[in-house]
Length: 154
Image 1: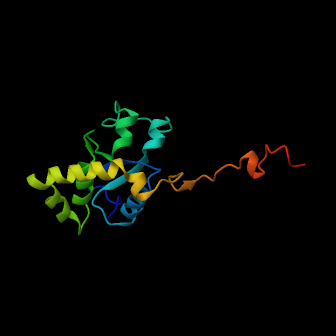
Image 2 (image 1 turned 180 degrees about the vertical axis):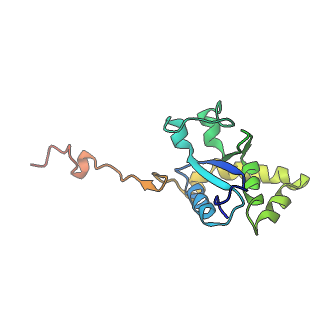
Image 3 (image 1 turned 120 degrees about the horizontal axis):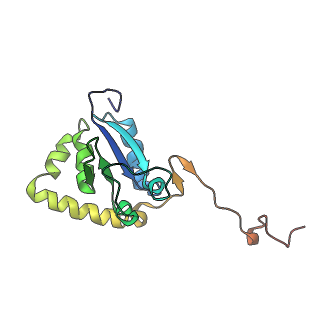
């Protein structure tokens, strides 16, 4: 179901490619049945210009991009933060009830506050990686580690 049919909406998910929670969530979404065709874009690729912004994302500052998850649809509508999570949950069989629950008037505000807290402290809570799009970089050796610029080595 995930992205295999023309009957499903096409959504683009902008996520933090350095956040362990975000990477795990994207991995899970790729494997789950979702009633949408999902395209995943690490925000770092937008910020550094590797990917050009599109309607709904254009005009968003790097700080705003980095602050929360964003989902855009084909009409250029943007869902951000907890609204983006609720949008994705609503298209996931078996989890759509959580979207309905989270959208209730009293719980919508609570879900937004909880989302902001988790988003703000995501690196502290879940860690940060140097991986993006499944590609990880290794730390470069420093001169003091015997790396290429260590003049004490023959």
